[in-house]
Image: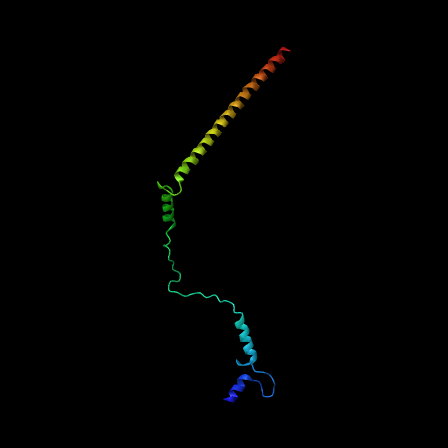
Amino acid sequence: MAEKDTTKNHPGPEGSGEPGTGPESPEAREECMALRRSPAPRLVERVTALRGQSIARPQRPKSVRRRWTQMDIYAKDAEIPYVKFEHASRDLVCSLMERQDRMNEEIFYQINDLRYRLEDLEEKLAAAGDVS
């Protein structure tokens, strides 16, 4: 048994003077101690029977979600008063469009008036040119 221990500690040939590389050699112990001094945390993934299954509600199809969202939006007592906002924004847009229509109409009246004035001036110039 003493021979086995010696071969583990010093596997090199006798008299070589080289220390062994076995697990009980002093260099191996130093490496083990160095590894234990600063261990890096290992990430571990747990394995369970519920892998891939969620505890939340099952996903609904898009069409169902859209229909429910639309029902939530147009509900009578919705959290977000979307219907009131829609009416207010529609009123704002309609009033802006009406104002723009009135402005366009006024611009056309001004252009038409300028055309008549220009025609009147041309007639006066032509009449004044004939007289002189």
